[in-house]
Image (tube, rainbow over the protein chains, first blue to last red):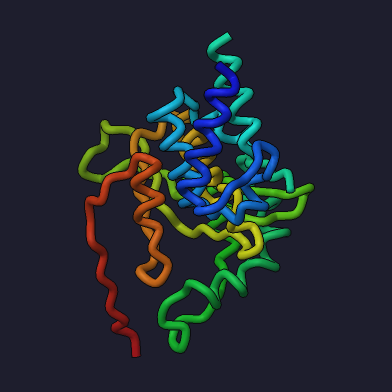
Amino acid sequence: METNTAEQLLKILEEQLGEKVSLDTSFEEMGMDSLDFMEFITEIRSTLGPVSDKEVFSLTKPRDVLNLLDAKIA
Amino acid sequence: MRVIYAVERWADYAKDAEALWPAHYAELALDQDKIKLGVDYERYEKADAEGHGMIVTARDDGKLVGYFIAMLLPHLHYKDAGKMAYPDVYYVLPEYRTAGVGAKLLLALEMACKAIGVTKIYMTCKLHQDHSKLFELLGYKPTDIVFTKYIGE
C-alpha cells in the first residue's frame, strides 16, 4: 500500500512540476509557491485521502504527506 | 525553514513589522504619488484591545516573514450574524513565497477566526497581484468587484 501511495504521490508531483522529485525533496526546494502547494494538496485530497487544514501545517515534503496518509490507513 | 504561524498582539507584531512595511507599501500600495505610508499605531492598538483586530503572523526562527491583519466587525445590516473578518493588510516576504507559506498564513487566519466565532471572511487582492486561484482552492467564492477612485486634491 505504501509503495502504491508513494508512487501516486510522486506521479502527481511530476505531472504538476514537469520533473521528477523524491519523497524527501522539500516543497521549498521544488520552488512551489502557495498556489502550487494548494493545487498539490487539493489533488491529494481528491485522489489519495483527506488532509485536514490543521494537518497541512506539518507538511514540508512529500514524505510527510505519505506518512500522514499511511497513519490514517493503519 | 521552519515557519510558525500564530495570533499575536499588536505591540509584539508592530515592533518587528515596521521593518517590513516600506517594502510591503512599495510592492502593493496604489496611488503612491498621492497616498504615503503612515501607520496609525493608536487605532491599531485600540482595535486590538477592543477585540476588533486579528493579527496572524508567520515567523521563521522568530523572524517575522509574513502577516495578515483582519478587522473583525459585525455587519451593520446583519447584526445577528456574528462578527465578520475584513482584510486590512497582508504580506509575505518575497523569499518566503514558497512551500505554501502564504497559503498556510491564510489557513491560520481562518482557523483563528473560527476559534473565536467569526462567521464569514472576506478576502481581497490587488489586480496586479492576483491570488484569485489560491483563494478559490481555499474555499473562497468570488462575490464582489471593487473599484477605487482617488478624489483628493
